[in-house]
Length: 98
Image 1 (cartoon, rainbow, N blue to C red):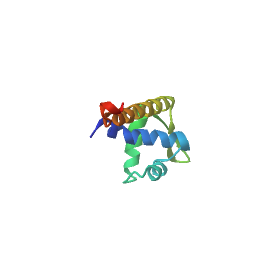
Image 2: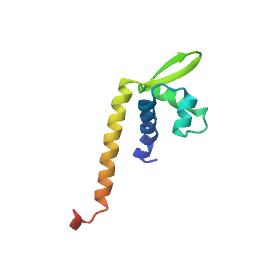
Image 3: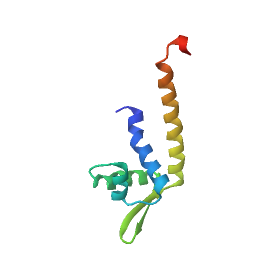
């Protein structure tokens, strides 16, 4: 798996939490089109352990939201993705087109 592909799910996940706020794992799974839905519990717990998401219980349900570290990582991932896209676009141009 390429490094950008590895970070694509993380980027999409953090962007969803930035846009929507607090979500349960099934709510996030539907937004992210992440299947099987039950695997969302494991994935979001991993991001919580890395400090990218906050985890708490509300009305007996596990709820996640974006942490400050998650916001910084989201910014970093977006900048990195933009740089990689620019590099790819420049690599397809011939030297005379630059």
